[in-house]
Image (cartoon, rainbow, N blue to C red; front, top):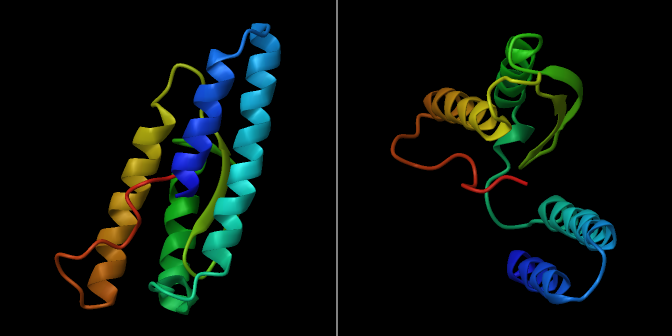
Length: 130
């Protein structure tokens, strides 16, 4: 529902008769607002799994983040929450697109975490990232 609400607001801004710079500023404001709302929703989630509370799963995530540091991105900060991860990185210019780096990180950690949890055929991460 939050994603639909955000997309509707962004579309309404695209249709407004305003300068491009103002349009981009409005879209950035909306993005920041909804990022905070998504994060609050995840932090308060009472349903769903909180696998990252487990030290072995959180450590796996930490090691995977640091493994890619320097080769796929410059790592500035990260925070492992109980059910999601915040990652602040810079991708080198003329290098792999960020979604590919994130896809690789999520694929590896999902497979490794599911092995540790003795789970097969089940998603570990939500398919979307923001």
